[in-house]
Structure formats: structure tokens, C-alpha cells
Length: 88
Image 1 (cartoon, rainbow, N blue to C red):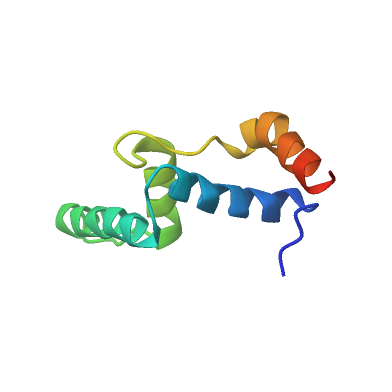
Image 2 (cartoon, helix red, strand yellow):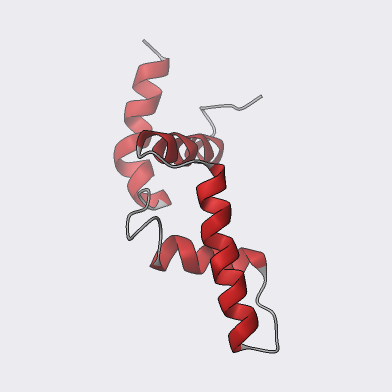
């Protein structure tokens, strides 16, 4: 069970909702990461970790150049709104 009063768990839920609200799903995320894995395999004999590829994708590529707000922005803007909505 997720605890929305835990900011890190709330951020994970926020990112999933962001994808849905913008017309993306888990298959879209996987497709993007698979493309990066293929590119990584073609360019280097040393494999990059999936976590590192995800971070590169999240902070540099996203879904056609769009991505959810970073954690700090979420904490400053979206998280207070989320807490307000669950406390009312």
C-alpha cells in the first residue's frame, strides 16, 4: 500500500499519473528504454546499467521531449496540492 504522506512514494504515484494524463503508459516507457539499450549496445562494448539509462532518458529525452517535473519541483508545487486533495 502506498503512503501519500511519504513524499517519495507520492512522487512515484505522481509520475505514473503524469504518464496517464499525457497519454503514455508503461509500454511507451519500455519502448523508449529499449531504444536506448539498442543504441547503447551499438555504441559501446561496456553496457550501461538500466538505472543509468533511465536517468539519462528521464533527464535528457523523455516522451518526445516532455517529462514530469523533477522531484524538487514536485515537492514545491505538486505535492502540497496532492496532500491538500487527500486531506479534504
